[in-house]
Length: 228
Ligand code: UTP
Image 1: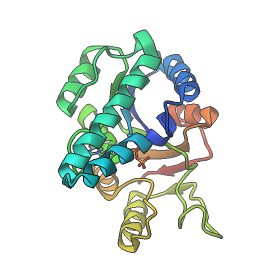
Image 2 (image 1 turned 180 degrees about the vertical axis):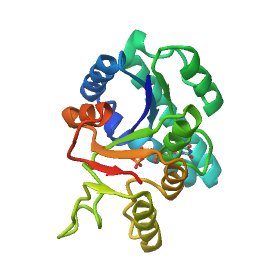
Image 3 (image 1 turned 120 degrees about the vertical axis):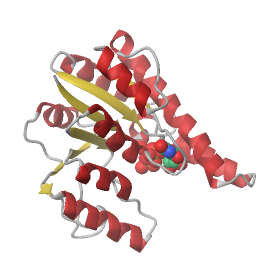
Image 4 (image 1 turned 90 degrees about the vertical axis):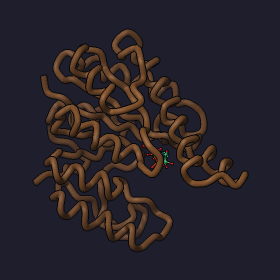
């Protein structure tokens, strides 16, 4: 069965408080597709992760500790996602890739996890999980409906239908250098891991379930596909 990693942005799971409706809807879709695709899910942290990290920093905590607190919020989101999946979810949230891979290869349950180590992001975790379990496709779900040639809200911003891994890496680097306060949709480490293992990456607005389904099932969609 084709393995696919679904990376769900924390802003979808918890924009301030858990978005129960979103979780219910996405869980129903995932369960529907379970017979045909082996999905593994990586959950982002969203606002709570940022709030906790910033509160830790406020007490003089260092970046490592701020990240540790943020990671716990990504894991809390993973517990939420797993709860929404009910019986279809693997009954534990693996804290590292080895355990996640063990769960993926030994059960037909949907494995859900959060972040792993300080200094990383859940984008990089999703790419690493895909490498580890041999998934050739990552679907990145966020509030943004694809990859644009400049920050999406800027006038004249143009969405890519497809792009190469090399183009993606170049664009991520440009954002990094600019440091304009706008984060790129996929961080540099994640881009490089996807490139080195030729993992196809699809960028989709996670609230548009038709597009999410199309991306998982290999149909044409309105987001951006990175390959080649
Ligand atoms: P993300 O920033 O990856 O989640 O993790 P997100 O919510 O999907 O991303 P945005 O912000 O909506 O785009 C949240 C935070 O958790 C820590 C980092 O502090 C990160 O900013 N984290 C996450 C780690 O330190 N290591 C990880 O492996 C994952």
